[in-house]
Image 1 (cartoon, rainbow over the protein chains, first blue to last red):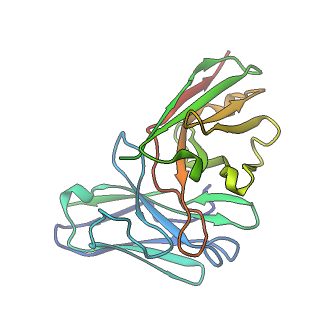
Image 2: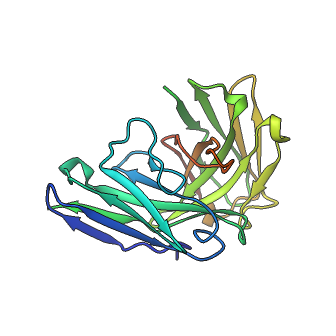
Length: 110
Length: 124
């Protein structure tokens, strides 16, 4: 059971906009920044968003992040077939004194 | 390009020890905190612990599940972070990953670069 809650799956057609939610609590998302990762099969996670809404260089601006209260969201616009992957949210938890993750959302591009 | 390569995984009996290495390239290793994660078969990502850079004391933090059994250290001259795992249990079976921990503009750590992982199997 992951500390952060994500929907197990999401889907969209090419060109569509999809959002993936991540729900936590006051001790993690409520007080700490959220990061998002993309994981393609058989590869290491890749950082997409850090500090709630910051994109590292090289990440397309189709990816955006937001946070409100104890929830965060990752939005992917102009969906492409190569976006088909697992997406994870992560944040530091002040009560557990450690990093916590969501269980991951499998995005399918129909 | 920043690269992290984990090594040292393998099959080990319960109660024994194993040391993993995370070898970094393409960065000034000593400037960064380094982090370890694991993912057990069919399970989610679990934080193991991290070590701060020497500038911040080189101190460590651990998950409750490994505290007292696992130790993280670093050799900045070799650009390697280590994860010493003692008293291994079957539930420690997982793929172990290391990550770099830069700071954001507010001084919060975040994980940016990940290695591909090394597999540890604890079984008799």
